[in-house]
Length: 520
Picture (cartoon, rainbow, N blue to C red):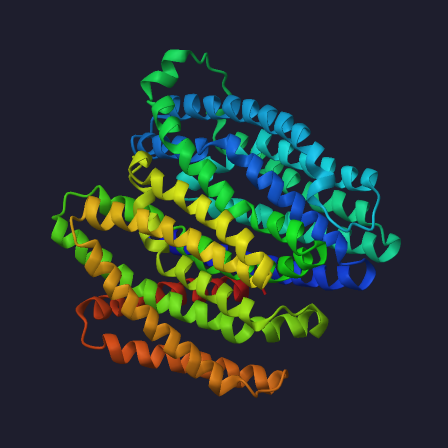
């Protein structure tokens, strides 16, 4: 993998996501000033329903991407065009399934949204607007894959960023002038559709062979083993959709729609940060891991590489998890006000969830390079069951905190399946030793969290208080983790890679400044 391409994708992804997050914060702040927060609850609940309906996609995108990597390496434009044409018709079929499933699911709207102040007819308008947006996205979103596989994902990000900036400005203007939620929603839902259409037109120009029509036969699908891949992945997809898409529905059904809206504020902040930290910053690493996995090096060398990335994951996850613990409540209070805060117990469980997601993100990227989804499908099924059972039972006793505990139980089952697949299945190493090591590291992170929380508990919600929190957060976990790993060879290797990427980043920044000075 080209390190400079990876860095370019990462840098532009992070900058784009930061800008997007700032726009979303401003958007929601203006929203709560002009409209009731209950409207956000409707959007969150219906969004969860459509995330469940997305099981119809069944991982087709990932399977097509896997085939495209090989064809791009061989510059086989005919096969790339054929695969993308097949991809288009599969997604058209999927959009029809989602539309049908969405129409059927609409009968449950009165039972899912509790204590709504709006009429049932109004709720159905909101629901069908969101359904139309989801279906329209499926018709064009498949073209993004060509940029991702060609390591030009930054082009998608640039289009997304410009489209979001223009349409959110229009959206806020309409909100201030008309104070009408339906107008606001129409603009919001059109953002992804407009961006996908622009990307579709750009790919037509840059990859002209995509405009060709191909005759797709059943044999084409059979030869590429797609049916088998889909059968193996379908359980993963359905189980993960149930795991990840039911929390807002459980909260709405048991706790009420206002709690869904408050929960949605925290989740928006979490998604914004984790998209920067995981999706945007680390996604370009996926290609590098693919190269590592399929290289001809010895397994011992590959294991050393994995352990270095595992050390990086621990440092990264400890900073992210403790960061949420320290900054979650102050950020919400500054952004929206004290009335929008959830209990600190929820913050603790949410921060722990984020730590687990982050510390095993690299394991997930290794696991994604293989396929063979039948090997950990039982863990996925268990995760879905654990999440629903514990979330529902504990929600009656602990409210939102109980739902989050159920999410933790569900994710641990997913993580165990991935760890067993990678550590035992590929590297032939001891899963017990690996989990024992991470149990010890979890205790270290918990200790660091207690220390940081103790040192920051009485700081004011102000610029000075924020800066002091920032210093404590940056110093304590980094210092303790470095003391633990100082003599570790994998830690030293991680530092060497970090130095290399920082030098590349500085070079990129200096080039940008030079170009700007020339224009001036």
